[in-house]
Length: 238
Image (tube, rainbow, N blue to C red):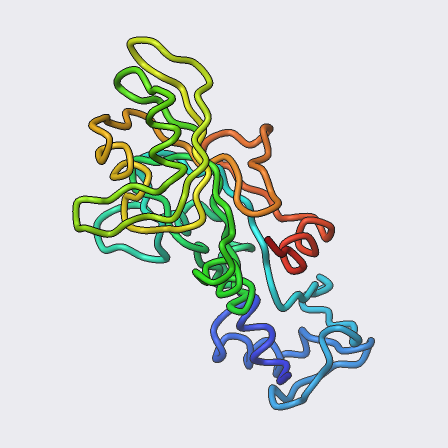
């Protein structure tokens, strides 16, 4: 990789600014000054220092976020705050994007990465990757609903969903439930409950595939996945 591209991609400035720092002798590779931006290096092997600071390179970034309500699951939006806007600068420079989406008013587990292959693997309908949600429903959820979800329900547009695993946690005037589905249709959880005459009044995703939302993450907070968690995702098979 060209050294000017590496430094620009990591947020040390524009290509023009990086070239100026190179010409000024502010960059060394393996202890030797490098002034030509066209010089190729191996970021995994070579030691790069800029303005006395060692550069730590990684090709991919994997972030788990506890998405808050009111934030859009997108990389950019002209009017509203996005999940990418919540990232620190040193993470945002890797240009991660949300894997799938959560509705604006839905909270919880959201994976962001710049690893397109992993994103495709997790979102492919053929993979049947399960996603589990906690929800509060506006009325009593019954065993009849559990059975209906097990068979799949017909949405307002005529689409018949794949089977969902519905668990009743607490029931009464309002019901607390957990629902595991393997699809990601638009507003799917809400529309599934509408299909049985009920309404979701609170929704939070608590897991995706083999990973559960870190309970220490407050709304709007995120952290990098551990190496073990990344390997779990990459090797995950239903």
